[in-house]
Length: 508
Image 1 (cartoon, one colour):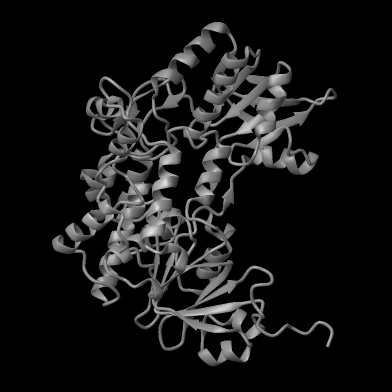
Image 2 (cartoon, helix red, strand yellow; image 1 turned 90 degrees about the vertical axis):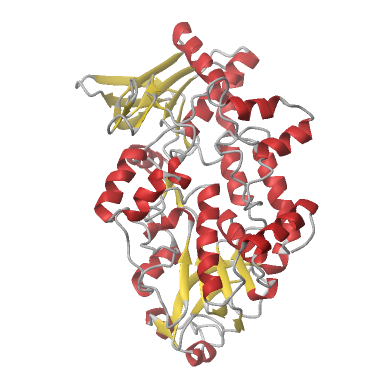
């Protein structure tokens, strides 16, 4: 009959029910598969938890990773590449923060020193940050080491491709995770995995555009001249190689610094005449912070910090403060230590100094009211500064470097979890989680839903959206799962034995 719902799809009854019974799924004709633990996302957050669980003795058959990605590094590799961090460049991460190695030893610095047959990187680690810049690994090193560990832990055996539609609680305990398989791979539109435990590591929902730039793109259907740094925009650099041009860069974080360095590198390498107009919403002129013990360096518009958060947030006093603090105090701490920052790298600083002296790099504070097209096919940014002065800046391109969209309703699975799954927001607008990263309110009669990565920010651990943060969350989740009997505890004997196996490249 025309308009009839195909067999194996979600029914109106399922869509409006917060808790499902087994027979409801069966009546819809959706194939049902049992697995103890499901991880949704398939990025580095999923990989890190799976790696820890395998080290702690979990069988590969007891875990299923659901992802639209072919490899755990795929999405991250794409974002770093388009934001001007190709595989050979160095990322913003510590030497010991290794997604493939929960022990952090040997560090990335030791690995790269052995590969390069050079002691230079070891000297850098020993003298950072006094005599040298902080060491950070090449993106390619991360990709290769994660690939090697994925092979070692049989990650590919646990991976199921598809798009996760929702996670719903199950009558009697546990969860149903609804997966839409790739076209042609299943006889039905959906399949359902029934599990006792679910882990969410879904990353950011998507790109975040400044309102005036979003309005311009939608009004004028112009996605060529106004671009986001996290989307492909190589045409900007190629056009500037063919003729002189003016680029407006907006943002003050690590991505803005990388885009600037690419523009400056091309200018030097190819003898270009590119003019760079850099607009800061907040222009930092020097050291700043809430008190003498919580200050960081700044200048020339930038707030400088080697990593996303101070090192004490990963395993020191700041981490302990967050764990003890209540919601209001955590919000205060987050505001004090968070914000947009970038590392202060010597080479890049010299490039900016030459640009200011040469009159081709123009940094200043401004708020953009709107962007308009010009009759000759260019762009005009109409601005106002803190003192009320109005500005008008004409450019060929605008590159938005303000970040990724982190609002949960923009993500289908998270939005459904808030509406039907019992989950609630914390003070930062993300998922409220407990000390083991269990999603509060989403419990299901002995079943537990965990979350890590960006969706779990703003809780007891401030650095959750980082390599080391994902490992910390994975270890806490695995410890809770060990207490529940899912895997073995990671004691000193097992840890030592597993590290020796890792060093030899032997399967878990």
